[in-house]
Image (spheres, rainbow, N blue to C red):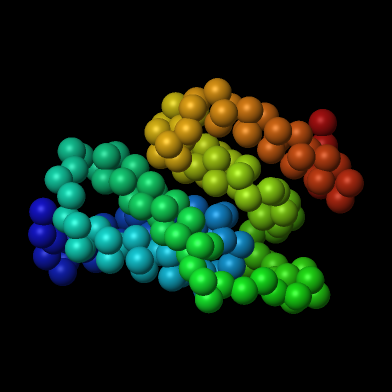
Length: 160
């Protein structure tokens, strides 16, 4: 399906925040998340898949964003930052301690947490988007909640 400029602008307006949040959760970098978001929408334009409805489009975009983020980490010119620079990279201040804690989670937990809690997908939908078993996603979410509880309890942010 070819999109007009106006249709594309509307799609980006509706779905860019979710694509960006997923990309940011995966990459941990604003610049990389912006690159992933741009590549995701370029893939939509290039491939013009036939999609059934808004929810199917949203799921396609999020799956494409996860794949783009994974591809970004496999690129040969990627480099590891020295530990001091890596620690200095922090999420935008307006998101607070919870986002900081989510970004501190191991990589495999960040995307499911973002998709489930930020985007409102069920565990079955998250599993389909990530191409994983539903039980795996539930396990990752359970472990992520425990890690987040521990991190936020240490900081005094979490209350029972």
